[in-house]
Length: 206
Image 1 (tube, rainbow, N blue to C red):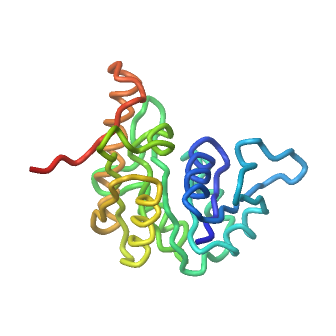
Image 2 (image 1 turned 30 degrees about the vertical axis):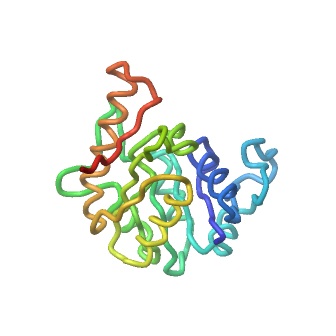
């Protein structure tokens, strides 16, 4: 698949590298052609293009922007053409508090900003280290994907599986109301409660 990436920071580049290693072609959206492209975006099976061109050329698009920049990034695209938009963002404001919750979610807000996309909330519940290496010995970290379009969710699950996660569909997009607080649990354990970033959530079965 051809994967467009909106957001060229550590999350976007980590996912891009992993998906390229899994055999996908990655197109990073780059807003300022006058600036040099960072080394993180220069890897095998990767290219860089203006954001609108990266979206137009992609089969699916990863949204990996800071929350404060998300509205501008998404609304700058006139038409996503019904493509899966894999929303990795978390609506976190000052003090690590969610700006959306209980009766709404960041994922649902992204869908309102991008009505021509098929939004799937995914890749938001863990850190970039686990995106780079989801496996812990014989076990794989879990990655849940919520969206209203079954084919878009299947795409998200496939890409998460390609990265090495145990990927599971997790109901409609409104279930982002559960996944975004789940992200805060990981952040709280990692940043505040001393667990560090070297742990992940998983599913254990008997």
